[in-house]
Length: 201
Image (cartoon, rainbow, N blue to C red):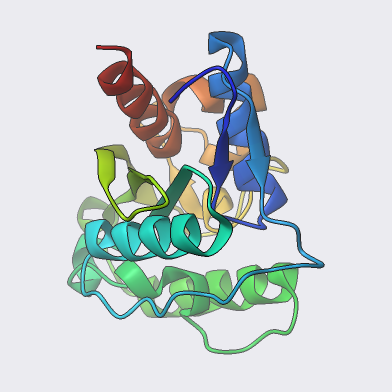
């Protein structure tokens, strides 16, 4: 990763904000995909976060001719056998907009966890990142996790996705963390910093 920057293979503005906040102090410019001019979306048919991150990084790097960083991330809930996992973004299978999908996903998760006792609600966010060159060469890969438990009701106004339902050890949700603190502690922050460290050597 060089000072001339990297393309983040996502049109999700929240992801772009988080990654930019971590990499820009290191002198690395980050741009996201143009929602009005998206290249063909790679088929994410791997059965792991790592596999899907590789597919996206290589696919978008080849399509755009730019060095490309991609992530695949989601929520693993122990009581649900690791679900929603790689299907986190479309867990409920409904919703036209990102906000509608997030609300539907959170509602489904609360229903699925309604009868799970407090001591059995362990969960974590997982983020796997991959950086690839336009010729398909994988430059670096990294993984980050953010441990917690599933709350019984959504809490907090920050973040996105399942953030309101991941309760951290100190008793607040991921969505109650100020963005600047989340950018230090989160699964995406850990993976992004690890990737930057790998590339600095």
